[in-house]
Amino acid sequence: MRQLIARHDDFFIVALKDKAYLVFEGKGKKSIIEFLTPPSSQEETQQAVVIENTKTSSSDDVNADANAKAEVKVKVAKVKNPPSSSDEELKEISAVAIIGGDDKNNTILRCAVARNNKTLSIYNVTTEDIELASVSTKTASIVYRTPKRVSCFAFSDLPMDDGSSSNTKSTLLISGDVAGDSYAYNLLRKGQRLLLGHTASMLTDIAIVDRDDIASFSRRRLLLTADRDEKIRISQFPDSYILEGFLLGHTAYVTAFTTIPSSYLAVSCGGDMTLRLWNIDDKSEICNLSTCDNNKNEIPTAITVSGCGQIIAVIFDECKRLSIYKISHKEINDQNSNNNTSPSLTLLGSVDCPSQPLSLIFHGKEAESNNNDNNGSVLTVLMGDPNYVGTYNIQDEHDDDNTVVSAISESSSSMQELLDVALKEEISMPKTILEKRNGDPILHKQNETRGPAGDDAPWNRVERIEIAKGHQKRSNAKKAEKKWKKRRTEAEAKVDTNSTVIE
Image 1 (tube, helix red, strand yellow):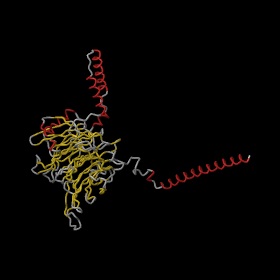
Image 2: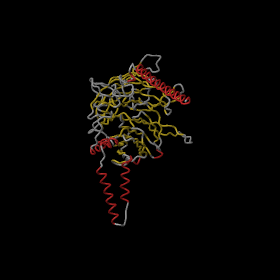
Image 3: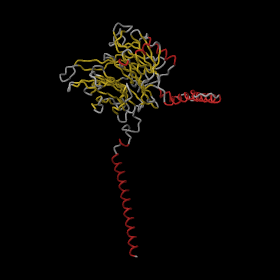
Image 4: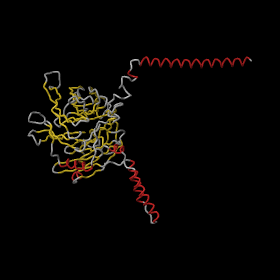
């Protein structure tokens, strides 16, 4: 799975294959910043060789000619070895994240970009960077080498004991990777820590949520991690070794989930083509809804929720459909229930995007549609080429005179400028964010030879006990025969010794 777009206030970080851009437009300003890719170890070695050869100088003409030839040879060697397709795939972006920074250091944003080559780059964006005109570039301040490829991000903060009376907090970047592990990374200086691991699994999504602890009259922070083993794990944070429980109900891998702001709810989607609503406090499933449209088995790959917490947007694999769901609350008469309402999911409508949707996110505030007088939520969808980015207005209600999903033709000038950059560089976007092998998602476990996946596996057979008993019986017989031969050899040697003494 991949996480290719993120937002903080009016700032968006967008991943276009192997390039990451920060897009901003607000208060009369517009800016686009390209985050430069950190050089790999091989590129650094080549650059060092070129610099070393160019800096060598001598008054002797012969030495100067030799140095010039050496420089030409190095440049020719670089031209003869262009980057291969595998190298280009390693530079592709797998996850992005953005959060506000520390105003004391003039840093207003901290951005994270993870790539398939197991690098994690942290970029600090200042006010001066935003005020620059047109398209500018930014280099990474911190570069991590991750143990495995990162698939998802989340942010959290921890209180710091710096000796002062003020409540100083340190912001951490929480990652999930394809090995099933979650790490916490420091954004100010290099430092990382393993939080938890899902045994022999893969993390597909991650989130941090604050909940009220009624027993202790305090707030507790929870770390939610989804994996390919049909579950969402709930752990305490930062004490992630304390397991709170699981959200169980999916019959296939979980592709994505999101928590509803200021509520006890979470929504997830998975390979079983269902959308499920959860109660985080009770660790229970409230309801589920099939996402299949016209009997088409299209796998939902990404999900996001609006700022009001009522509208859910979902996109699908190998399908241009964008579906909009609403969380409805129905009053119930149950005195034993802590909540007087029962949430449910309702499909409001769907629309086809011009290109394959890859990632999506709601804007932070409600906006007014150009075609309607009613206020709605604005959704930005990252798509495949040649459209790249699309903006939609989402209405809460549907009637004959009101369309639920309507495309906004006039995009912001910054997004339009980003689109012009993408078209100029002819960026080729990935076809899907659901990684596949031979046409089958790698999250799918049906064709695996390990684990309790197949009924024909030896550990799943009913006769495995009899088979094990047979192996043990033959092993005991071999040991007994070996022991009997050893005793017979010792007895024969003893007889020969006695015969020699008598003679």
